Image (tube, rainbow, N blue to C red; front, side, top):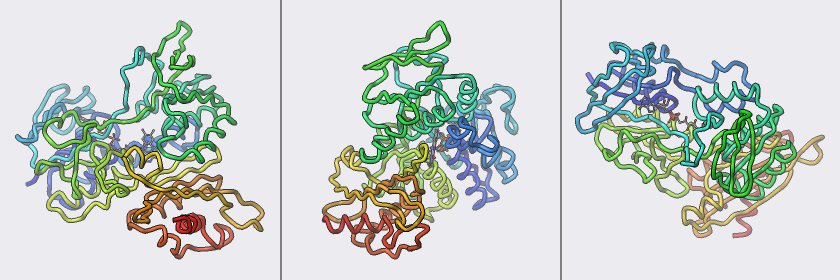
Length: 455
Ligand SMILES: Cc1cc2nc3c(=O)[nH]c(=O)nc-3n(C[C@H](O)[C@H](O)[C@H](O)COP(=O)(O)OP(=O)(O)OC[C@H]3O[C@@H](n4cnc5c(N)ncnc54)[C@H](O)[C@@H]3O)c2cc1C
């Protein structure tokens, strides 16, 4: 009988557990999770803050009971405290009296011998060593407990400073501003969403924030947090001071892999390097989701891109490959999207800045045109930016921004990158035309045609 230990259970852990049990119903699968819940969709946090969620319980798509029903031995509210990969053992301890799994007793540390280990410990928010950062007014935004804390605080708060203008910070700042909270968005970079989109698009995002009264404090790093007597916190930056009732810290994530340090190969940031079958560098150790690397197709290299899309797909692959390598991982383009006010933004693959950070030369082609014909009663422009390799002409990325729903366009680019399409091939794809949806030449095809003409 094979015994599997899965450490951590949000998306990667949930999908790994269900896929392993589906493939191997006779195996013993132990699942360890330090929280009392599993499968929390953190992408719902900002929407919940803005009262766009029908029922917060629906932000969970599985439960300890459902996994137990599928055959897993659940250890909820249980911390895995050490892992010895060579000895194939781990130690674990319930974090409180409620958190006892089958055969555990409150607080006692126990040891489990496993045949196979699945590391799904995910990521933790980056908390830089800034003076005063442990202020009770500074909140993180990652898990269900954080969501509850933000929601509670947001009920009363009239002002907020959001630090970090990536997807998470931008979404929460948007929802605060829509619910009447006076909001300041701080970032060390000089554009919101600077790591996700080019300036032509982020200028539209900056304008939308300003229209909704958000103070953009960009191009300035936070140097200190200062608690005030009136229950507020002052966020001190290189260029100013911003006082509010709460501050949300959303400046990135790091893999949560200290338990494995020195035992398996990792990237410098701690992401566990996995191969096409989710195997770590040591036999019988698998990793997936935010604790692991992804294979980034635009560069053909391992990278660290923490997204639920990767966690889910990699988790499923663990079940298919844990007995023997069977189904290969197709890699990722980091395809993603965000809605800010009435702007839809979606992207896949490299931006110019992303390529530069990785030492790659790319070219970009931009096209702004209405998404459907002018004879329709309404239409609206789409900004499309195509990133491509000037030597091979391969598509390397695409970004879209519009008041129309452009999310499908990023998925098209994702497939083009994965299939290693050239701009010439993308320009000749058979895309649909129907005036409700697009013009005779779909804007994805149009930007590819423009790129091919420029090349
Ligand atoms: C606000 C927000 C919005 C997001 N929106 C999107 C989105 O729209 N689209 C998208 O694709 N991605 C989104 N993401 C990213 C996505 O949530 C993550 O990529 C995803 O959660 C990764 O899943 P995971 O299971 O690998 O890791 P995690 O979610 O980090 O889960 C790891 C789990 O392991 C547990 N754990 C860790 N160490 C131990 C231990 N020693 N013992 C026991 N348990 C342990 C943790 O408690 C946790 O439950 C968002 C993230 C945030 C924070």
